[in-house]
Length: 260
Image (cartoon, rainbow, N blue to C red; front, side):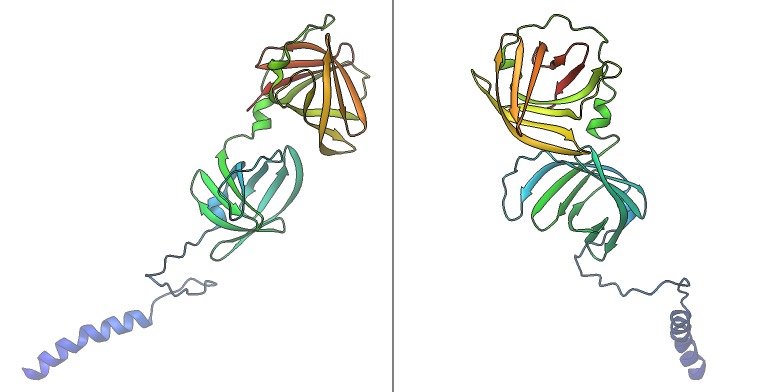
């Protein structure tokens, strides 16, 4: 009876040991020893799927957001690749990878993942901490859906300088066939317009986007802007605080919306 009891007690121990020894690991997978008490968060590229738009930026080690006009846009259209946009101009396409636990490589640029959820992401590139929101479409894709009435602006209108304050993003250009301009306005920001105008203007030139400070003024229905050794002279057609229309009739008309 004693012999039977000892055998009965030892048998489960042998079964458990045998099961552990025969535990199956998927082919090609290296077993990972998990430390249950560790608080380290591990990320994977599947969590990045979709479009991410930068909405806030801070200098590393500071708490105050800084002004920026080159929002970083990330489109993870495949698990192992990413489109990286600087503003609305496509910069490059490259491989995306994560080195455990939180080192992210985007087309050769290295970031540290500070936080990542289904809708928010925070990346540190060593100089800036960048906050992203997940979005169904980038802001410039939304602008492209805005409609502008096709109309001939033969009569420029006087506008109130105060209606120009803020940043205006061009969402449509209306140009006559054959009109060619090597420099196209992308956005224009007016800083508290008074008798003289100051601000920043972004434009496409030689295949790239440039942003320059400008000075200018309004004279009647004409807007004069001086920047980067160039002078623009436009007629003003509309400035109601929501939409700004300017340009030259029968040449090129710019339609801009305030997004601030």
